[in-house]
Length: 284
Image (cartoon, rainbow, N blue to C red; front, side, top):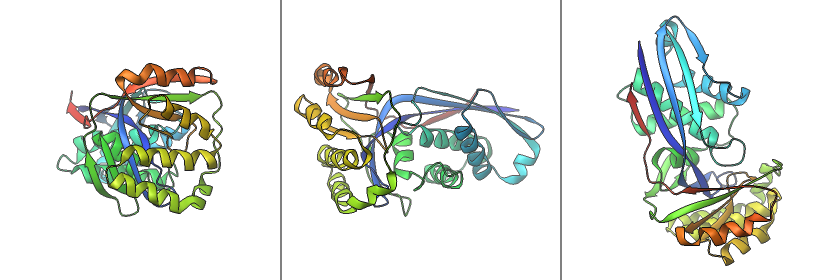
């Protein structure tokens, strides 16, 4: 019998990776934790009512990251608690796949490296069709915090650094969950490529804003909101992931001004401090 608890957090997009296979993210402090317990028997039991999407993903992660022989002789009890709203571009599925992968590694592969843990989660995301690219950029944002710039195609971290501590993300979650056609992001491949180059040079706010203007045009958000957010103190503003959430990052003393812009829109606004905290796991 063993029980472990793993925890990490969500992230917002700096550069969407769908068009080019390269992305960048910034960790925010909305948290997620998973408890995985082994008992004799076999199979998996989900303690909370997961959506069918996340239970499919969790199953795929367990099957990828736990050796077959161990699955034959252990029954796994899995529970996930999350503050990250699902289906809005705030990396909830990457957080789920990474947190489960981390917990399973602690139980069954204690020598696994961070990269191996992340790889298992990414592979499971592709297998269970939760993500087109495997969302390695998102997984890294959730796992390491701070700024992470990645090459998803080759599963490589190109750049990672801590973010200033005095920043928060103001996140608008629209009532309507409508998303545009994500495959059309490829039309602006060159623009995303430029945004990624900016992120790679640590020019994160221009990268985020360029990404925001490109994604909003294609995914049907209003680009005007992004410019108003910037005008009122946001350092960078963008559609997060494939939307429809919008994230603006600002210094803490500008948060109220930035929030005001979103007040008239139909939805809810949450403020989440930026985080540099790395994922954690321990035995209970």
